[in-house]
Length: 180
Image 1 (cartoon, rainbow, N blue to C red):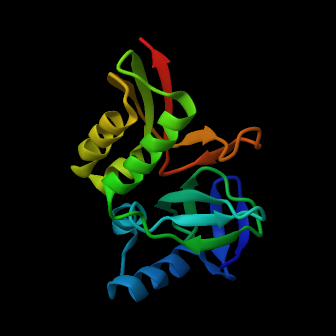
Image 2 (image 1 turned 90 degrees about the vertical axis):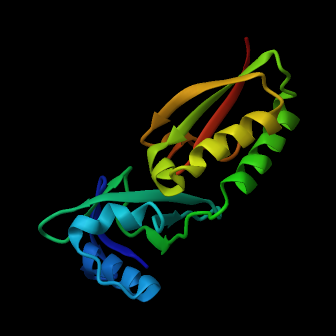
Image 3 (image 1 turned 135 degrees about the vertical axis):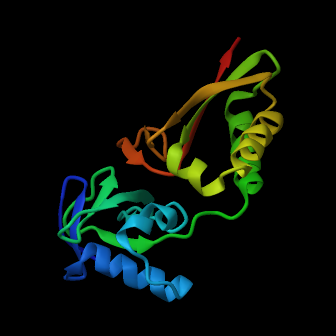
């Protein structure tokens, strides 16, 4: 799909259709349900939009509101003419946590003397609901750190690769190990 008209965090049109109408059609295809504006956030945490970047990265954008004109307001900017895709949020909280914990341990060699700092996206928490606790517990136990602290956030600012230009990501977990 193409964000045919957008400015800052507002997507007015996707593929030359009002953005909410286009998203509503995608939800109808996936769930056989005609979503109304008041239900938007119930669906977007499970089926957010992704911005496709030329280097293969996908930046998650969660629409948080549909305005009276049919535009979608997102957490984070969407450049005009961005290529969009509909994403499906992960089903397993533990699979991603185990993979992330392994990478953290390889990069930082965490021990019980480390505190694992975690910044967890609110949209991800809404998607996983009660499994959020399981994901955080799995992350802590598999990382090797002794304790966990952090915050719930609207998204994370960071880069996928070391030295990359920082991007604002929705649905992300940002972690860092620090000695206690």
